[in-house]
Length: 246
Image (cartoon, rainbow, N blue to C red; front, side):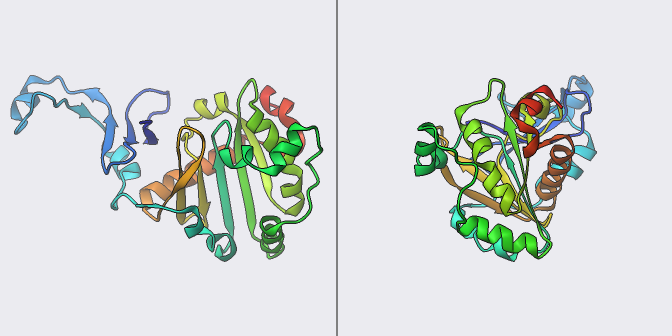
């Protein structure tokens, strides 16, 4: 099972780092192995399978979860938040494709060569228009691979309809996202307060969301949002500009 990156206090790509082990309430810590013989001699109840690493207090202060691991909920459980949020609904999209897109009628039309840039209003876009008219922000950053995947090309082709409704959709290369140490998870962040992390299976099908207000997790998501937003390119710039780093 893929680990979920939580956060790091390293600026140059090495340890220390915290990860979550999905499906458990356990955290994996990455750090320098403890080798001081006097310290090792003082450790208690050591099992043969155990090892020990050093991590700075700042890593735990910033990123260690402070609440119990949230339960997996259906995506529908957060539907009211898209109307009730007060100022910002923001999404990070990291996958190379989504089963919901591939199974849609719109995908079939796109593969047949139809122009899907100007779609008629639907409940999602109607709500976006209403919320943004009230002064709220709907924003996304989508990761783009090189070469770009079919799933990403589909989203790029369909984005103008959402942008016209009021969404601010931006793009960032996966290589740049990795350089910036962004998390490799999808999430919605509402009002810098409520975090909804997506769970997917290997076929890109949404299994549900983990919803939390844990301060450490929310702060990490806010930091990821600010970093991604600063470095990403707007939809109007096109995928070529995104891949070139323009």
